[in-house]
Length: 363
Length: 148
Image (cartoon, rainbow over all chains, first blue to last red; front, side, top):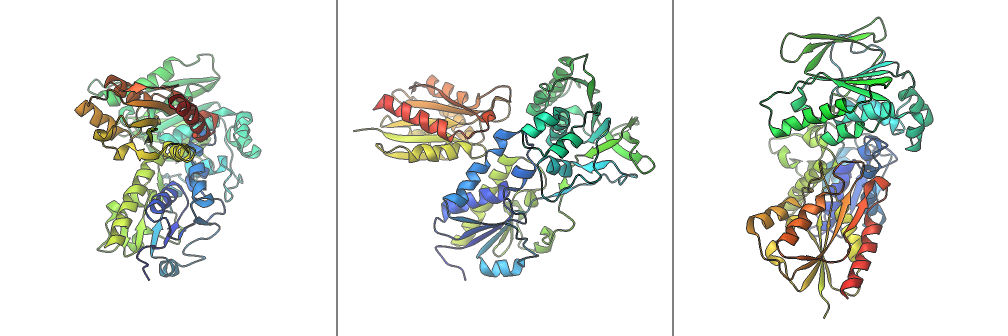
């Protein structure tokens, strides 16, 4: 039954959007029962398993979230999968409001011929490996001499950097030794980073490009072309890439090549990756890159094995813009919005959904 | 009578707010209020208060989204802030170019409108892997010593 002054809240998922939602709800309801559930034993979702291990400034936001449990009377229930260990129906009976903050944890696959050859890995999986995720194993994973990363958003940028940092530096950031040696292999000589957008629309943050300049022994190249009608904002991306390229070390033995405006068409090889073919996103061009390893960094989707799928809860009353699914059931973060935006965007989303929840409870 | 301390925070991911809460908790001999810049009305600037401004940096040395409404209001209305005293603490991350420039946008505008900055410009570097909270609290204590 709804308790007027102290409604109870269950949040499913302890990543940033779930924890920020708990923060905002706690401010509005200082006495309420708030419990955050997570499938895994360790909280914080993508802050722990998605943010790159060398981005320690970003990882530090967990201290904010730890305060929820240590001081603000929010409960953390780990190792509990809603829909498996506790049914969502039971949860909705026990709590006045349930907020789904389960994110999007499956890599979008490279849906091309040859897309399941050995040597192709999803970026989410590789990032989880770097971050010591309990469900990932190095079994069958190896990185050779020539890596192609498909996609050029921030996740792709992280993988360039982490692949080139070297095992010693990586273990210094807490990466398990076996993972560091396998993924930041000494054999790696060339990384082609290939995205379907022109440079002006590429999704990387400029700060991530600038960060690559600090990596030793790397030569950068690019096929980016400056378009004179680009807005100043769009030109910034071309400028950042150009600066990286022009300040490159010509003696370096490792090379990173940015290629813009290419869409993957086919991965070739017998049982293992040998090459990947692209066609120009706009126009007739074709490109073949020889590679023994491919990382796909083309976004995320709901996990196919997930016990809870958003579409199952959409009704005519659903208002996804502010996270309302149905009576007492809401969604927030990537599950609600799609796999875009970093931590601040999800904080803003948590504020928006919390405001809607608070408003609904007042009626 | 001692001034009321108003802690104004500009945040993107909640770290400045988090530090502001700790700063407030450590102030015992003044009345304290913690205000999000997003919610702050610039007409409320008062010489009876002393402002501790804590603000992070976002993107390419830009203001965090939480601070943008306040800067826009200051730029639109250009109020006379003569007699207003404030102190600045900036959050940044030296692994980025344009280190810690976010708070400077606010500092420059407040000064331009006649407000006086007191004490040391506090800074915290997230690249140390530490949170800004302790540095911000230490700076708060030193700054308040100056005005007591």
